[in-house]
Image 1 (tube, one colour):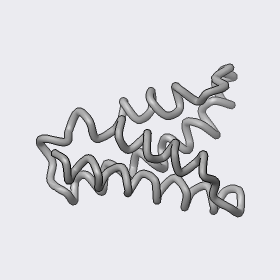
Image 2 (cartoon, rainbow, N blue to C red):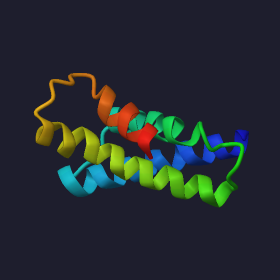
Image 3 (cartoon, rainbow, N blue to C red):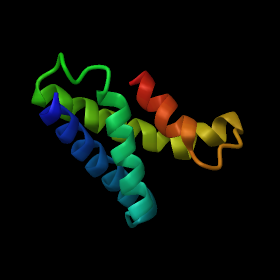
Image 4 (cartoon, rainbow, N blue to C red):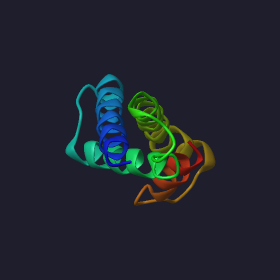
Amino acid sequence: AFVNTVVATAAATLAWIAGEALLRGKASMLGAASGAVAGLVAITPACGTVGPMGAIVIGLVSGFLCLWGVTGLKKMLGADDSLDVFGVHGVGGIV
């Protein structure tokens, strides 16, 4: 469970900053921190049942989808979510 938590968090952080660099031309530290939280949120329910490769997949998927939740979904819904709580915790929890 410990290894899965660390690996998923790292994968989500890398996915978020890679996606942010593709979208905006550069990555940010706030994005890296948000990606880490997204990975933690997504792996928590599954950390005892998946292996490290599953944790990497969950981390990568949650990093990209939570970035979309913060940038795209929030605009689509017209949500006033100044702290990006739903984009990170809501979408990450669904993943």
